[in-house]
Image (cartoon, rainbow, N blue to C red; front, side, top):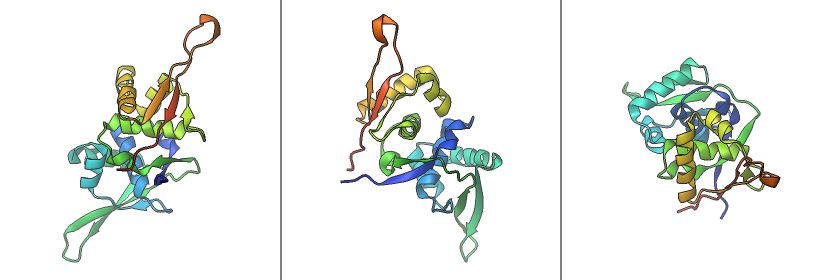
Amino acid sequence: MKQKIFYGYSFIFEQSISVQAKLIFLYLCKFADRAGKCFPSVRSMAQCCNISKRSIFDHMRFLENEKIVSRDRRFRHDGTQTSNWYQINKLKDAWFTIPSMIFELEISAQAKLVYMYLCYRANKENTCFPSRKAICEACTVGKTKLAEVLDELEQNGLLKKEIHFRDKRRGQTSNLYTILDIECA
């Protein structure tokens, strides 16, 4: 069975913003229409991104201040508020595909983000070889945390890591990462 996918915008990995803000942005991408609009609830964002509702508000405010996302508050006929409309403001041509099931997995927020970054960097064979430094910078995680996250992804069957070395004992090169399909349960 073919996996369902959504499109993420790669510019988010060039932003100097938190893991949580990047993850929330990519969650919005999952539900956005072609015009970049969506209206997921804060509760679903918090649950699927492994972030508290209070933090969702803080990070959404930050994304709005950075002009990455804008928000339009919506109200019911009786005056009570319903879910907001969110607009992704920086629709660029550089997008990549992400398996939709990533937000349904019981893995850390950092693991979800690193997995999506590796999806962005992957070729048609689902392999890539970014340096640890590049992954740390793009995903706003430290080297120690990255090692834990890569182990978490491997243990959950989402990633296969192969260590590569230069010829004639000249040290290690970048690892080769193979992104494995997310099993649909």
